[in-house]
Length: 512
Image 1 (cartoon, one colour):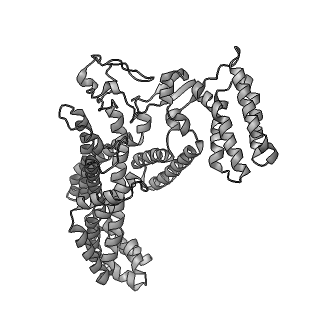
Image 2 (cartoon, rainbow, N blue to C red):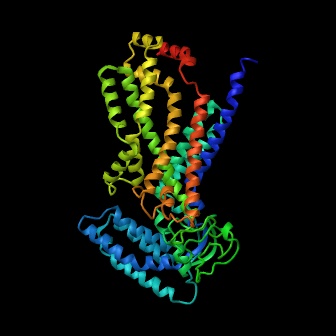
Image 3 (cartoon, rainbow, N blue to C red):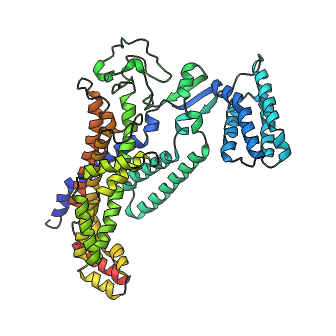
């Protein structure tokens, strides 16, 4: 009974870890799946895009002329080929079967022109003949209606990074349900599948077609037979100027808005319904829930990248200082003192202000600045652990076996110092969330129209428009709470020292 007491004491902390893991899985899930949860693009639709077909038909001769001129001057590249292929896909997608032969003949000539100068010389005239033939056919009365095809615009708009993030989320969320023996294999296979999914998205070449689709559907340029929209049928930057500062649906009830006219676009709930703008709108009538979901993508990505950078820099520098000591340790300590002598937030603001925004993506820029400033605490923690661990007998035994110092430090001693590092990294991530929100709130972070939680809070500071501060602030609070619960649970569950693992590590060092 006495031997089981420590395990009983850890039950509440393990429960806190499960709550933290579940909350983080939910928060990162809403961020990863934001393009499929809130978008002005339908998940699936059966429609004929008459406007896109007409645009592709009208502009085909011009892009062909550009390609022919480039080939004539030996300046053609893949960038000049892709516009032609894109327009041919648009034409092929909606073209009736009775007109397919003319397009197939031109495609064969286009493929032959890639290697034949004779076919290249006739390509421009063939493009104009094709346009003339299809235009005349479209004026006939029978058999010329465009085909309605099935497409998945919201999925087509995903980037390769979105595809990998979705796969990685599934891999990490399902990993705890596997045994320890199968967990590594599951992560390896699932992350590999996520990478292949990302490559497939990058090679699909369909993202251009998805842009502006809802506007074309509203204007009547797309003949829709059926469509399935996302749960929140609003884009993160989609404006409804006649619905500015509309309160949340559950506050205003089912009363219809007196602001007229309000354009109800395809897929959107009716005016005054409970599902229209569930969390209200901002000054431009943009849906707060859609912007909240998309804003979490940047805020959580910045926090995760910053914490990863903080941990890597802190672990490497702390390990080197703790293992080698002497001049290395002296330079390390002086550097830490210099960095800590300045207010961290002031350094971060200065770094964000001076870094080239036009060359570095804002997400990477903010994460880089936070990482370069906030590494000192983890580095000092790792240094202290290495100073203690290098005095143990296993270090002396490893040195006697002729193992290089760097291998001893990173292969044998660092794993014993990782438990407190993991705890510090969890708390560092929560701090990065607050820092990014503060930077965006002050206007130095990711600028409009791209949303982030801190930027959403700063949109309107009038207390009467409380929903613009409440909901983004609640998301920041939940994220910080989840990482703090994770850090506290790890601190109470993981061993705080290497004492329990010395025998195993010494045996491993002896085998090495």
